[in-house]
Amino acid sequence: TGRLAGKTCFVTAAAQGIGRATALAFAQEGARVIATDKNAPLLATLAAENLTTHPLDVLDDAALAAAVAAANPDVLFNCAGFVHQNTAETCTDADWDFAYALNVRSQWKAMQAVLPIMLAKGGGSIVNMASAASSIKGVPNRFVYGATKAAIIGMTKSVAADYVTRGIRCNCICPGTVDTPSLGDRIAANAAAAGGLEAARAAFVARQAMGRLATAEEMAALAVYLASEESSFVTAQAVVIDGGWTN
Ligand code: NAD
Image 1: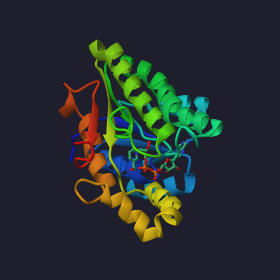
Image 2: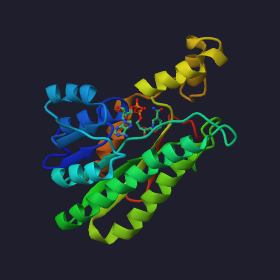
Image 3: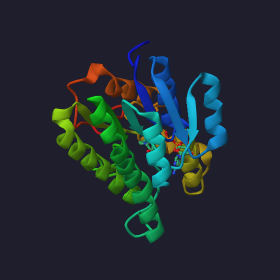
């Protein structure tokens, strides 16, 4: 505990999954956490854990900028994202636009809002959520998702280069398959083709090198490291945390 004492951490998509586990881990390490999500009722359950909650749809530029400014953060964890399952043939124009708006543009807008604040404070740490399914690995049926997550790696490295002399670090996390509520949705979507829910889940597990999925808490541990001063010489990295999937 105490690895983030004195820090204010702003987290998007904190109501469930990796964002929630990370918001809780940040608080556990002594941070003041501003937990945001568009799912206000689910987000509200974090108030019982002594986190500050703020309902926020990251697609709303003005609301995002205002929330970041009000929080005055030392750490930004850009976690919001959506996983489309499609190919170059089946991806629709709407899928493409939505994926880029949520997965890429919202992270840029949050960084645009936080960078002047971090410059004024003399430093900060930005942690973006990418994926191993990106420029790191081509994954079947993750066409627009992989494109957007590769864009996040590019954005992360670019921001790291621009601010490296001014105390601001920018890294991204590239998970393999993490057991979260939305993974359950993707498994359910594949159930008919796979011959049932159990078979669909088994197919996700079967592609894991360790024979199991990651937990959200395992992602949170990496986010704490990247957010904290322990990683003070780490910037511009796409950190893969995939149980050996890309080996
Ligand atoms: P999830 O998909 O189960 O939950 C996503 C959360 O985001 C929900 O609470 C939802 O309300 C919120 N959200 C969605 N749209 C939003 C918006 N416009 N504004 C604010 N909040 C919004 O969570 P997860 O599976 O932990 O995924 C979180 C991130 O991790 C995503 O960026 C995802 O791409 C990435 N990721 C997940 C996995 C995985 O296997 N689960 C792997 C690699 C990367």
